[in-house]
Image (cartoon, rainbow, N blue to C red):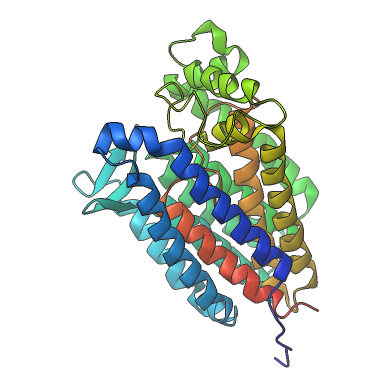
Length: 365
């Protein structure tokens, strides 16, 4: 292809490693009490997070040195593998139920979350499909419908678990790729209205989702039920003030705030490190998204550009949803904060995705 390979984007790499380090420290701070209560080991969650962080960094470093064009050849097999895992997880006896969703396949004391794999598989496939020269994205039937059908099938399987949060991230990243590929705004606007109607239907079909919506609008209407998480999150953020209560000094992690090491870790960051600490995390994510979009704009080919846009979009959508939930601007969805929250599948796959993004940055114009 005649591409010139340079060093990876150093600013993106530093932002990634800084967020990862903050995440390891805050996972320990948020989970130590829970670790000791549940497992008799103050470091239970920390040790597992460190293991996945090390494995993820090794994978990121290796993939950072693999030409991203390799993923174009692997896009279709990866998508088929992702669909196979989404089907397997729905089979009783194979898929494990955690947090009310059958979204895990357990392996000994560890587990993998197929929907996390599907996010990157979908990004790879759509980037390949829409970068093909013969693809006519401006045509509704032959151009736009095929990628939407694939995305819709994956979203449908994820909703059978059910996992609306991960499904929303997948749809958001996919639509960003489709938009970047040149889809007509009139087509996307029409589909957007259909999507809103479908989203309303999903909420009405499941009473627990409707409760989350009503709790989001007025959490104090059910303070011990659907509104409990939102209220406890705000109780954590409020006392943080400018500089916070101090690292390790959170009160809400003492069994008041559910999932302090995963979905609501940003609440603990705000409580312990205050506005300054929370602001630093947001600045690092802003830098990461900025460098990711810059990589997408300066990529040497359409496939690299769409792939970079999809990965960056996945990160941005996930951050927006997670923090929106934590500060009470969105209903509770169960989405982790990238690179910060505890979680093996999500952390490892995020670092793998960033390895691909860093490789694309090596060929930027």
